[in-house]
Amino acid sequence: MDSVPGVQRPPWDPHKERENRATHGVGFDEAEEAVLDRLSRSWRDSEHSDDEPRSIVIGESIRGRLLFVVVTTDTEGKMRIISARRATKRERHAYQDF
Image 1 (cartoon, rainbow, N blue to C red):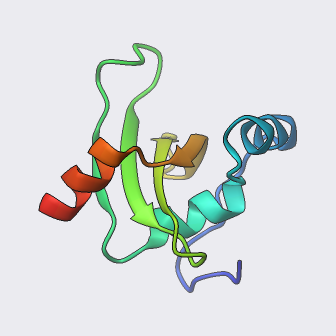
Image 2 (cartoon, rainbow, N blue to C red; image 1 turned 30 degrees about the vertical axis):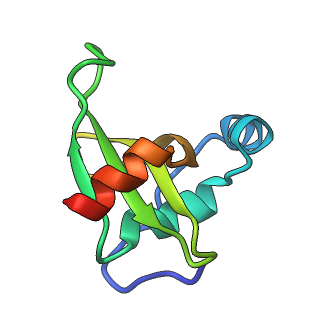
């Protein structure tokens, strides 16, 4: 993905990215596209981590796939992708109804 002015590419662990791609069929580069989608929806995910603040983002990638992406932001405001997968039918409906 080309860089977006004012947005720093999020760091990600190459091993975790390969594992996510193998498990869910989604690479973090495509997940980044969904996060940057101007129509994406996001909200805090306080249920799944006590260690770090997490957010859920649902957005569309350039490939036209609607993705469910879990991210965290460090103290400097840099985003890190934790996981990404295709949105479920229920999540797609929630996104469309938002």
